[in-house]
Length: 185
Ligand SMILES: [Zn+2]
Image 1 (tube, protein in one colour):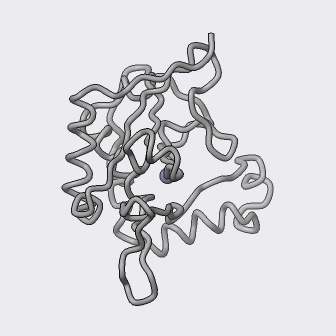
Image 2 (cartoon, rainbow, N blue to C red; image 1 turned 180 degrees about the vertical axis):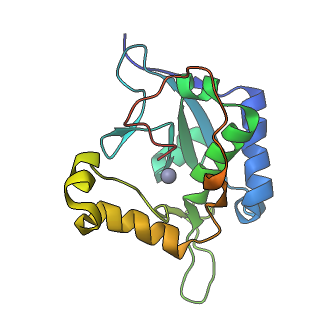
């Protein structure tokens, strides 16, 4: 059975609105409209992929034709199975991550760029970091491996950001896990 798509529930749209007004007031100020779609894979393959890896969610800016038809500016797709495993705080963080990708395009003097429909034009920005690496390569080469250096640099540059790593991880009952899971795309 192919993938199926469903509009998010009113409750989930409420969480998205909370993420936008709390952490992205500029998007809220310009009334950026974001659709929230739940995607079910209906099979063993992951519902969503980015860069070849399974992801819990991803965001895309809509083109002019889609904007007109959908009356939305961007769409967040969420893996419905993964979503069902998240509590509210985790869901909020996931949606915050997706909105963090969105930027309102501005000209050199800072004025907002708008499309022919007068809606602000959006773009996306990449994450501050994207970790990829092979355990086998790090085992063979240690800090000579670029992926090990990247990890080292991340911890050195962002001291304080990862203080929670000292905490003991919460004991959680057997949720599905794969080596390829990323938090989000
Ligand atoms: Zn991302």
